[in-house]
Image 1 (cartoon, rainbow, N blue to C red):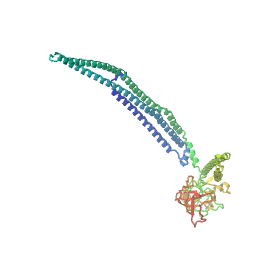
Image 2 (image 1 turned 120 degrees about the vertical axis):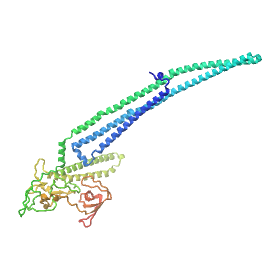
Image 3 (image 1 turned 60 degrees about the vertical axis):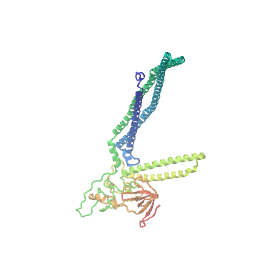
Image 4 (image 1 turned 180 degrees about the vertical axis):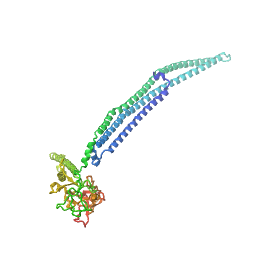
Length: 556
C-alpha cells in the first residue's frame, strides 16, 4: 500500500488532504490550550475562594479557629489550596508536554510538506517542458514532411513538363532533395525527443512521483501517530495528579473525623467561664412588720461593717453581679477590670506573654546591634561604630518600656490570681462577692477594689457595696451607666491605629471630645460619638480642656 503507486495521479487531492491533516492537528492544539486556560482559571478561583475564607490575622475570627470544627474547616481550605495547585500542575504539564511540542511539530510538518510538494511541482514542470519539446519536434517533423512532399511533387511536375528548361528542372530537383533531407533530420529529432520523453515519463511515474508521495505518506502517518501519542499524554497528565488529589480529599476527611464536639464544648467553658459561683437563695423579707429590716447574708448585697443596712432604691449598684450586669459600651479598661475574674486572668496572662515576646525580640535586636558594633570596632573600614549608638539606645529604651509595661500587667495578674479561688477549692461566693461575717481578708479586700485603666485602684464606696437590690428592680438597677461628660476637646496631631482592645483609631486633624485626662500613664480617654470612645496616646493629640473643668491643663 503506497500512495506513490496507488495515487500517482492524485497530486492535487493529496495536497488538500495533507493541509486538512495539519488543520486537524492545529485544532487539537487549540483545544488543549483552552483546556490549560480553564485549569488555570479554575485553580485561581479555588485559591481565591480558599483565601477569602481564611481567618484574618490578629482578629476575633482567628481566635475562633481553636475549635475543632473550625480547625477542620481551616484544613479544608488548606487542602483546597493544594487541590488548586494540582490543577495548575495539569495546566503546566499539558502546556509543556503537548501544546509546545505539537506547535513545534506542526511547524516542522509544514516545512516538510512544503518541500515535498515543491519537489512534486518541479517534477511536473519538467514533464511539461519535455512534453512541449516533444510536441514541438513532432510538429516540425510533420511540417518538414509536408514540405518535402510538396517539393517532390513540384519536381516531378517540372520534370514531366517538356516546356521547362533543364535548369529549372535541376533546381526543382535540388529543392526536393533539400526538403527531403530536412524531413529526415526532423524525423531523427522527433524520434530522439520521443525516446527522451518516454524515458523521463517513466522515471516520473515510476521513480520521482512514488518517492515524493512516499515521503508525503510517511509525513502524514507521523502526524497521525503524534496526535495519538498526544491524546495518551493528555490522559496521563490527568492521571498523574489523581493520587495527590486523593490525598487532598483524604486530608479533608481526616480533618472532619478529628472534630470533637466534647472538646469544643470544653473550649466554650474555658472561653466564657467567669470564675464565680452562682448566687445563693434570696431570703424572704417581711414588709408587713414596720420595723428595721436587715439584709440577710444570702441577699444580693453585702452587709455594712456596723451591721446597719441602708436601703437605696433607684441607684446604680456596683456589686459585681456578673450574670446580670450588661456590658459597658465604653472603652475596655487597660487592666480588663470590666471582665469576670477568670476571663480577666486569661486576658492579662495573654498580654504578659505578648509583652515578654516583644521584650525577647528587642533583646535579640540589641544583641545583634552589639555584635555589629563589635565588628565595626575590629574592622573600622566596614562601618562607624558610633552610628549604632543611637539605635542601641533606642532599643534599650524600648526594652525598659516593655519591662515596665510587663511589670504593670504582672502586678494586675498577681492580684487577680490572689483573688481567684484555688482550682478544686469550693469557695462560696454570692453574687460575685465573698460571703463572710468576719474581718475581710487580703483576697476580699482585693475583691472590693476595681482597677482603673491607668493601673490605679479605688475603693468602692461601702454604701454602694451594701445596696439592697430587689429582684423586681433588676432591669432598672443594672442598666448601662451614663456616659462620662466631656471635659474638653482635642485635635489629633497624628494618625493612630487603635488595634488593641480599649483603644480607638483617630485620623490626623480629627476633632474629638476628651472625657478623661492623662493620669500619668501616657493615655487620654476620648470620645467620637455616643458609641465610640477609647484611649489614645497623649502625645498623639493636642488637648484643650474646658477652663471651668477642675485642674484644667493642656497637654501637647
